[in-house]
Image (cartoon, rainbow, N blue to C red):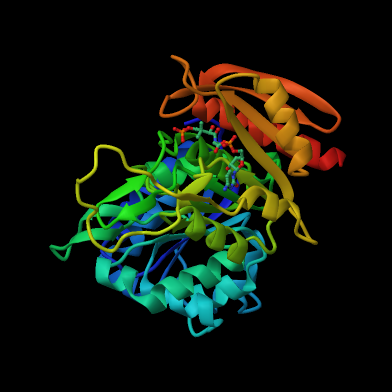
Length: 400
Ligand code: PMT
């Protein structure tokens, strides 16, 4: 764990079995020097006694909307004013639905409406409830309103099922709050869309053309942008990486699907980073039956895919547009050509096909070019490289 929080954190516990994990969360947050006050819904009190949270936080627990102990009987407003961060953990499907509808029929939902500070929710529920279209719509709506979603994780559930819906671990939640201290965030308030991973271009129902991208660079950028306070949308090709906690992830397979997902979602984003290794060519025709072995030589007819990066850069209301260049030779020359030909704000060039860095490696090195400068990011773990690149993007944006 890195930085300390040193903030007023209002922890709201709603009624799910994961409520017991939030007791540990209070302990971890206090260890990071946060001052914690706890609000519990009536359902949460069925799972864990308020006294547990009172003892751990050192403050009385609130659960009533009209609190006669508060001199102006406006406890919710006072609590909302006090909070630097509102963290709802666990956030049940019911409380997520209430937030998304703007209902205010208990202390927690009223607090959410009254809060002007950053809001984080850590959903926890049965996997079928999480996957239900209406829950996903509510989550998407809350993300679009600026709420940061932490998790949920995947695994065995208290109900005996297995899937997405487990509340993120208290240590993960605490790490995210530590790393996203609003006072230190270079991209706070900005929406960042990142593409990552390879695309797969189908030849027939069982074969496809793809490349060696693992998605690690793009996912590291998504983590770094989240840490910098951005709201992150990640459009991801097929990879075996877990979704970054707090990002909206849209999974695609082909270059055409990636193009559609980026163009449908780009509005309102301040930054676009094209870290995906998008196929330049796709089979002209996808055969609907498995291609049979016959002649010794065969020919594939390929057609150019749409250039997503160039399409984003040519929008009327364009985001700060950052491309990647993956090169096996003449790195600087090709990168600078892409910068000007695609009308980008910045390009991050990396060598591919070498022993270190590039595709499917834990490490990378970048030569970054923009209209008025350049910088070398020396070989390092992709997470470190991503943080350096995000900082550089934030600096260059503020100078623009
Ligand atoms: O995923 P990893 O294993 O971690 O590897 C990381 C990486 C090497 C894939 C990454 O660092 C990288 O270089 N990504 C871009 C790879 C690439 O496709 O480069 P390119 O030079 O062919 O394309 C230039 C730019 O145009 C890229 O930003 C690419 O996303 C974009 N492009 C390309 C084709 C296309 N149809 N649409 C695009 O938007």
